[in-house]
Length: 96
Image (cartoon, rainbow, N blue to C red; front, side):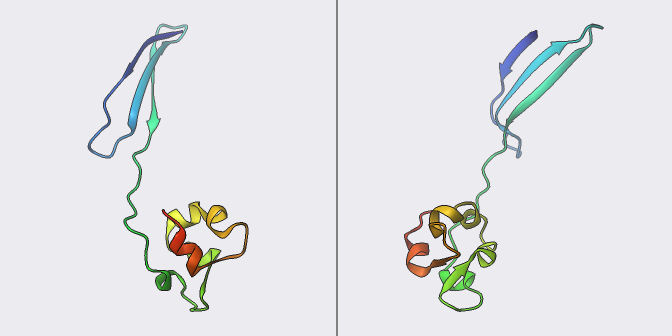
């Protein structure tokens, strides 16, 4: 059974947000502390211009070209609507 539970404030040095700890005691009486939480979000900055990602200049961003901007890769299925590429209009309408 957990011996103690608590919440610590988010770290300002790159630690986890909403970090929590729980302590257990094993059969030998030793205390084990488990810390858990979510890492802070990464700030990727504003999305790059369409032309910067369309490296082959065919007027579309392929999934491999999208690798240049992680938030776009993460939203690929939503933005591409299950297609193989994204048009400039789709990219401009996407709010990262």
